[in-house]
Structure formats: C-alpha cells, structure tokens
Length: 369
Image 1 (cartoon, rainbow, N blue to C red):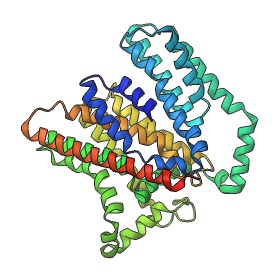
Image 2: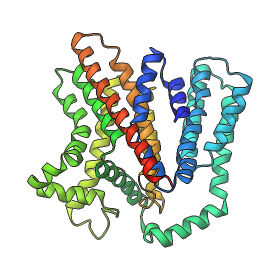
Image 3: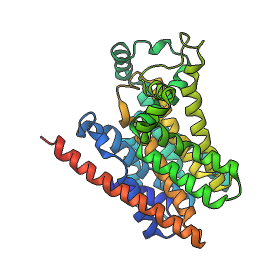
Image 4: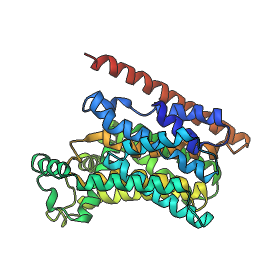
C-alpha cells in the first residue's frame, strides 16, 4: 500500500504536502484490504493490487513532464518497468492507454510539441494492449469462463453489457456498504453544503449518492421493516443477474435499478463540476470517470459476478484520489464554521481508517494457516 500512497501523493498533492499526505494515508487505510484475500492473498494482490500500484507509479512522469520537472535517468527505467508490469493486466492497461493518449494530446495542444518519453510510454502501453488482444490464451480462457460461469454472455447486446456494468457496480456498493464510496460521497456533500449555502438544488444533487447508501445499506434494518417495497428494490439490485432483459422489459420495476445507478453517478459528476468549477482540465472528473469505466468494463466479461468486490479496486482508488482532491479544496476555506466542519470530517476519516486497519489485521490473523 506504500507505493499507491507515494504515487498519489506525488501526482495529486501539491500544497501542505505533509498534512494532506497524512490525510491521504488514513483514506487509503479505509480501503478494506481484506478483499485481497477473496481468491487467495498471493493471487489477488498480484493480479489487482500490484497492477494498481505500478500503474499509479507509471503515471508520475506525466505529472513531472507537465510541471517541467526533471526526471532522473534511473527513474525512466523504473517508470517503464512499472508500465510494462501494469500493462499486463487488462483493466490497468486500458486505464494507462487512456491516460497517456489523453495527456499526450493535451501536451501537444499546450506546448505544440510532445516530450519524447511520453511517446515512448504511449507506444509501450499500446503494444501491451495489442499483446493482450492477440494472445490466444485469453480467448481460450474467455470461452471457458463463458461456458462455466455466464452461459448467456454472448447473447447480450452492447447496451445490455453497459447496463449490467452499472447495476452490478451499484449492487456491490449497496450490498456491501462500500466504505470508500461512503466517505467519498460524504466529502462531496460536506463541501457542497459548506460552499453553496443558498443553493438548495445543488445540495439535493450532492446528497443523493450519500443518502442512497445510508438508506439502502446502513439503515436497512430499519427501512426493511417500514418500507417493504424498497427492500425488494435492494434485493433486485444486489442480485447477480442481468436485471433488465427482453424477458423483463415489459415491467418498469426492472428499469429502477439502472435509473437508480445512473442518477447516483450523474449526481457525483455534477457535484464534481460544482466543486472544481470547470469542465475543461477537471482532473477529479477525469479520475472519477476513468475509475467508473474500469468497473463498467467488467460488464463485458463473463467473470463479472464470480470476481466479486476485488474488481472494484481501481474504481475505489479513483474515489480515494478524488476524496483527497476534494479535501484539499475544503482545506482552503478559512471561515470559522468551515474549520469546524473540516475537523469533524477529518476525525471521521481518521477513525474509519484506524478501525479498518484493525479489521484487516484481524482478517490476516483469522485467515493465516
């Protein structure tokens, strides 16, 4: 976990380095690392945590080149090795291709030229994707997984798979009470309520994602006994199945999970636009959409249900990155009331990080042989 933290700090934290990095540490500690035991510690960390860590490290040169910071000779080697390792995992490879192509274009528009190392890195990661797409073993594995895990996969249309990506993602968030999503949406609501005191519509938009997980998961023992049909919607959302299909399309009930998921994510997008007040070069928005896309890609794979929560790692760390970006914006406010809000929000994040760390330690003790 040190390498992801180091990389996020280098890329996304510029002011009050020590204080903001300390808060980032607690946000990362809030990530339930016990997910890495879902398919065995070794296999899961190598296939998910390591590509995440090396992928983030391979993004550091983008930040350095953008800021015209000198890259040491040995760092070129380390960044390229990290890129090659991360490029061997399909999801991290897709993220890196998107990041390097996007910023290569932005560098070209900004400076009318491109740094040679950016071209080298872009070509390397494109070659990694070509290798993945042309590897015969991947096709053989996919065919086996379709026959064993998801026999109807090939019958789904493109939109079916996109819808499946949305509903399965929100199903995992609601069904498991995703801590990172909860903290992220809480910070969004805190910032909007602190900075848009008179705009009721903005407040409503910002609080939708946070209230959704509170009502659908954390307060479910209460809501289950009062709002019986809300329970049925929750059961539908967490079910491991294609919710909207030709067989169910005549019943509007099966549209609700997709609408619910779409509204929640759109509310987050609009809130990020309100927080950072720009559409162009909105890093937080790019990070969120990239993380969400990494999870939506699972809708195109037959292992979408069998892989479980571990496939959320790239999306969850995208939310951690956005959380520290929002936190830095929140810390710029010096009003007396804003300082009180900052302290309360910081205390909540630190407590959750510490408790989650203890939880992971206990998990290690319980699962060790």
